[in-house]
Amino acid sequence: MRTSRRRRIATAGLLGASVFGIAIVSGLVFVGAQGHGEEKRNQPQSAIEKAKEKGFDGVDFSYDLFGAPSGQSTAHIAEEVMRKDMADKPRVMANHAALLQARYTLECKTQTGAIMTKGKPQPIGPTVQLKEGMTWDKLSHISPEDIRRQKLFPSGFMRLPHVKHEVGGQVFPQKQVEQFPRLQRFDVDFDLPDCFLPEFPPPIFLTTHPELGDVSQGEVLSADNFDRLFRGLITPVQLDGLRMLVTQFPQEEFNLTPDRKSPKPSLGVACLDCHVNFHTTGQFHLNPDTRPQRDRLRLDTVSLRGMFNQQVHGSKRSLRSIEDFTEFEQRTAYFNGDPIRAMKKGMNVIDRLQVAHMAQIQNMIDFPPAPRLDPMTGRLDRARASQQEIAGEDLFFGKARCVTCHQPPAYTDHMLHDLFLERFGAEADGPIKSFALRGIKDSPPYLHDGRLLTLEDTVEFFNLVAGLQLNGDEKSALVAFMRAL
Ligand code: HEC
Ligand code: HEC
Image 1 (cartoon, rainbow, N blue to C red):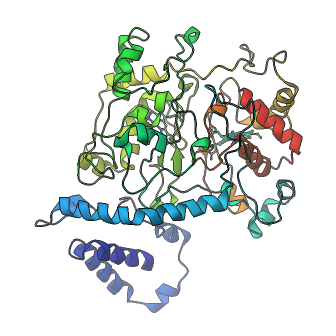
Image 2 (image 1 turned 120 degrees about the vertical axis):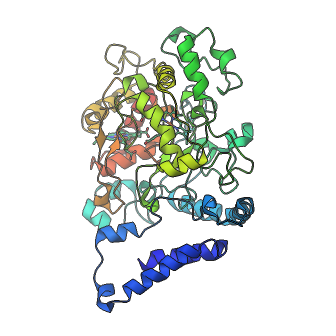
Image 3 (image 1 turned 90 degrees about the vertical axis):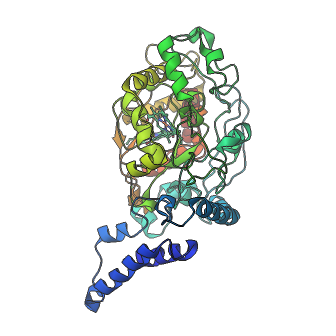
């Protein structure tokens, strides 16, 4: 409680006391109420109360322009916020860069032959750093309890925060911002180097036209070109759905109100700004499902390839249809799960008819080709696979037990699983969707928040978390198998 009072007063100081008079008054009233018994303050606080104190309780900005008292100019306050955010930006980005440096070796290593579908080199790891003197092999022989007690769990295996976690919101990679300057924020930049991101633009594969291969023609699907690229290839219903997917709609950071993070007023973001060409290039935001603010999970945009073969959607929400996810993406995620802010900034209620159109086109997008998989089983065609890939498949379906949660053909079990990382002293993430591994070579970084930058890191992660004690050859084989998926 004391923490929250301090934060409110600090916030008020930041923006001019008069705007936050109410906050200060409530703070003082609160002090008065607490003055009753000194002994109360010494009582151990319950874990629940402590959790609530970690951060804001729902409204994620430390100001609310819409609440400016009469006589105050919202435009003026917005300018002040922008000036302050811009002044803070170098410090915010430097702090985050230091955090990344401490967790990872950010060298862009590549390997001949290890490429994504259109030829971008896959990033090669592991990039996660170990404590001085530790090796992956040594670590895998230490019990979870000892790892927790001696704080040996690599920091790169822990939650990856947003570049500015206390504010959060959608952040787009530099390459995309260069092509679409409307996606630039004034308060933060994207954090990860381009070599750890998917191809830009990613290829698009239609389930209705496998013979055509990539139908993107190397372009980023947008309002400018979707009709030219897709008319005649898809049905009128799907074309209308696609039109909606490339149309910008208001959201928390990009909108037409003064309370936004783009220098100029913005019509908003389109679904395919994040799910570029129905895939992803690493755009991230915070999940709308968790509070307080500090506990919200960073979310790395997931691919929409192969949606037709997946039955739960969202890392935590577990929605059961693409229709529902389409509708609620805008109603909840765009505005941080806060319906009031949605209404203030321009909530867009999509008619169910259009929702159906948008869902239908999403369900027409295929995974990239995987020529070494047997069409009948989704497993390796052993006549075409390398020895190393075969060894990896044997491990995946055997000793390494990956198949428990990643089953062919999409390599998911359509469930959420709790990996209980708190056993190792990390923050508990709770149950998360077992993401599909088909086409996984195309979508670094990995896990819901992108904390693992390469497939090698994912193998080290599961080796430790599942207590597998794999040797070096076995780890390389598992990676080789995943590259073939
Ligand atoms: C900020 C970028 C962003 C925008 C804009 C965005 N999404 Fe998403 N989308 C995500 C992220 C991140 C996830 C993963 C959510 C999670 O794990 O809970 C996701 C998940 C999804 C999923 C579920 C995938 C699965 O099976 O788990 C669907 C479907 C989807 N988005 C559709 C849409 C549609 C339709 C729109 C436009 C209305 C949209 N998205 C706009 C980032 C975005
Ligand atoms: C108990 C179920 C379970 C098992 C067993 C399991 N996984 Fe996973 N896997 C998950 C879950 C859950 C996630 C998502 C975790 C997260 O995002 O925090 C995941 C994520 C992944 C990802 C990242 C996917 C993405 O899109 O970012 C890879 C790669 C992966 N698993 C590979 C493996 C390998 C290799 C094995 C075997 C060594 C394995 N998994 C065993 C449940 C499992």
